[in-house]
Length: 305
Length: 217
Image 1 (cartoon, one colour):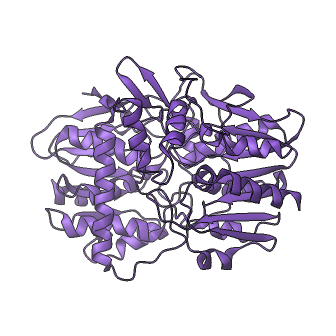
Image 2 (tube, chains in turn red, cyan):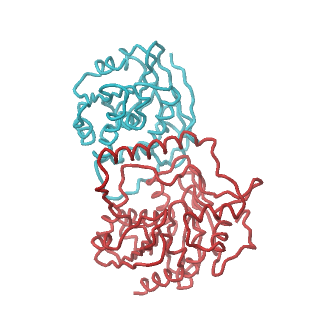
């Protein structure tokens, strides 16, 4: 890892055993593997604004359970190339390129948050390629807001739109703010208020790089949390209802900035026939980062069935 | 005349053409899917007395082509917003896909958009009105970066235009515009997202293109 401070370690965290590039449509996608190269493949998709290095404790646990774990940095994230545009269809194409690189036989797929939603789309488009599917807190539900009048709701949307447009217009001279390692850890802490400083510092040494001005998160500033669009996140739940392969959903129940706040009773009606839901109390949105051992245990137990 | 000013949208260079000079309000023309500004040279807006501009969307005409796709209507909206800010304010004439983008911009910037005309043209329908079966659009190589970018044609023909989404932009324009009757629909095809726009009280419909432009001039 360029610029990575190898002296910073975290108990149980292990960098990938192998790393390579899959090039697709002119973008270099950084791919990482843990575990025996000839073991059965398990693909691991990270969430928005995240990167594969956040699997450094979770992935080795799955690898120790007998799996060849393959993760990648989505375009504009981690060590993958930055793109000119970002969009759902492009992320899906990149995902398929990584799957195609691994092979066309059915595989196990595990996705967190946006990664889980991308996998919902991929699974509906190519059900024969998914052996088993685990979705980690990537199940946004429909959340009507009956207390907001129609007029106010429209005004709320306008603010989202203009904020996003203003951001796009000013973007060409924007760069991520540099800081000390401790400062960028503090920024990530807003997303992960429940993680220890030690764990966050380790994560920062992978997800950020150091230049003469200080540390900066690698994620492309063009990728902005929030925004607006015609798609509804809860369509993933509707797709999930029809999945024919064994399915495990995991929900973290502590509300956090990046989470969906989905309640179990909102998911249960949409669970596929061979589906099961695990609810983790006292756990935030990043279930696999916050409680890697418990979540790996759940996943391995599900895969052993 | 056709002079081009290049504007930046992140890593993309957008070509804003001035097709004609004149006195009075600016007219900004937004082309249809796969089309380009240069092909819209007069007489497309003959009746307009003021300066006439036309923007090449990302991946079209003289604008640059991004690597690896990722096109959405919201990205094109940001293209048009950058052109609008360069001009200050303008009346919009959108053909096809450009008509949908013009509607969105009218809702997003009601203080800068002085009337919007939505006209027939390529890409007027969009891909669907609601969720479709999931699909992965295939990768199409475009090594010479030719326009129109074939990935744009593929991604922007499968976009989703829910009627309530289009309607929300129409409402924003109607509620916040500085002018009367800020939206005029001159499209002859009945399309769910446009029906939702036309259904909003205050949206003008069934007027010829020249007459619609004259009202805003």
